[in-house]
Image 1: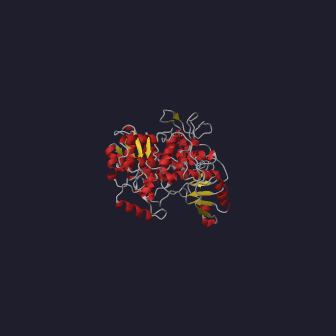
Image 2 (image 1 turned 90 degrees about the horizontal axis):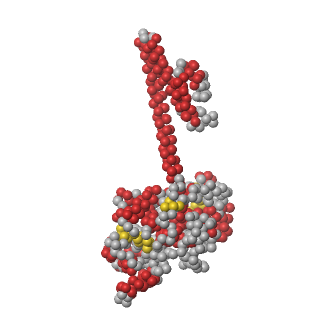
Image 3 (image 1 turned 90 degrees about the vertical axis):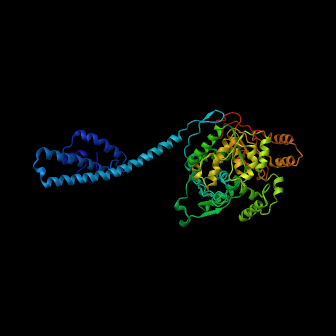
Length: 566
């Protein structure tokens, strides 16, 4: 066994033993496994020369050498032991050995600590990757698929995307961009999240989503990297083209208009990503990939997941609950121009906010016209009337899945008087638990998203991005009860009840009749040619990925026999 080739005269442990001092065979047998273990971890091509094997071996030999010297001196030359030379020799050897041991212990401890931490981390990762069965609400156990082998393909270039909007708008955009990268054989760079919108959330992708899971779970479809390699930056002759793709585009647009751009540019940067892929008319495999990204690859970070599950558990322990997505927030009211129920001062404040953001094109908006067209979120007072008409009793536990309600407790007073068991994440969790999420609206929205998907009933008061994506998740989870309010009809009935035209019984009956077929039951999306904004949104009802009959254990697989009614 080679110890260190460059050390003159000490080629092996045996030769070292012969040239220095007698070393018992038992001692060699004890240190030989240690040396072999160390050598096995070596990085040298011959497999046995490691960065610390030589000093460690010499250290062991020197310890034994000093001990043998002391024994021999004590046994055979007691008089000479008292001479200064012998004392000096022993002290010097001991000092060298001690310092060598100290240095080696520090080195070995650092190395072993590194291996230990790495081992623990890898162990935890492998435990996490063990495909334990997951119990669905219907009691059926399903095992998620293991990661598939990587897809090998020649990449046509790098696709960078800067998502815009809130959490759920960005979530849908990420699903679209993964599908575009897959279709064009591109390498996708981990998406950048919006930090300049109204919410000004500084969160990065990895602050909200599990980036490793995102990359690994899609490796059989598309190559994803955390950043563009340095050699492809503009300073080295490689160019980047920045542009927004056309909204609601099909695969033909990306194949004929976008792919040729990679002949001149190595990197393409999409600086807008909202609704850039059509709802309908795409190949089935692309539609299923959009679902796979949404339902499987985009997993929240452990911190968000753990706190979200804690919220869900706390709510379920108190009984069934309704998640009310009360979108009566400042940005929504300013953007939509809806001021019904607001004071004159509040209405002016919302108008000034609208003028403060140049990308909000409409500045002068007539609130009552919007409301009568069903384009405004329901007020907290209107929501209380509708919930009561739909049969939710006073004892119903209601979780408000929203940010700060505009007008605060004053606007929640009527809703709270009808439903005293109103809770929010801020009332269920401690300040310390929420501290890491403060001033991070997207991370807060992620908690509301998890609770809304898990609720016994979900009632959105406005059909924004969160409402649509939660609806799609609840369809995917087995068509959970989701009440899709007809706001245009609701405000008409509310006004008739409040002006005395309809009694309470008449009002309640009318509300129930309107919503008999608006509970997110299985159906196909409504398609309106050349009017994608008016047709049903893909992520609210991805019927290509849903199953209501047989072989539903793999909703995204090729064998499910879903026959969704028209």
